[in-house]
Image (cartoon, rainbow, N blue to C red; front, side, top):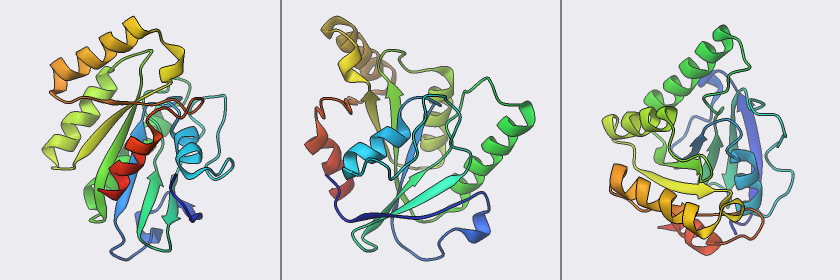
Length: 187
């Protein structure tokens, strides 16, 4: 588990974000992929990031301090959620693009993908964005406990074929591979 993690702030405005050189790991994924649950689980802090059963609830960028400034976790709004207005989708896209393109603190993106759904077109666009902008990323397959071994194998094989990388599989219920995921942050 990541220890000594504290909420710092939530904002829409790039000018109000922390202005320092603390490394940031940005948590990225589609709406309802489990970003907030992922943060709460890896920090062993149930209410740190707000979770909801309804997708699209994260509407700003949230910052969490890890070990008194060793690094930060950053939770950005999910993408691909259909029940928000076109104006809101555009605002989210602009906010995410501005954060990802302007912040010099980003050391890695953690792309969460629901292993029941596989890589979506939106995920592929995000990966292309990371590659184009030279942002290192790790893919983590979430909700691993909700698929059988055959579907899990298909998910892993598909990502290996498309992206030449092996995703880490994870379940917030069983905490499978938690130690490997924590190593992503301490490498």
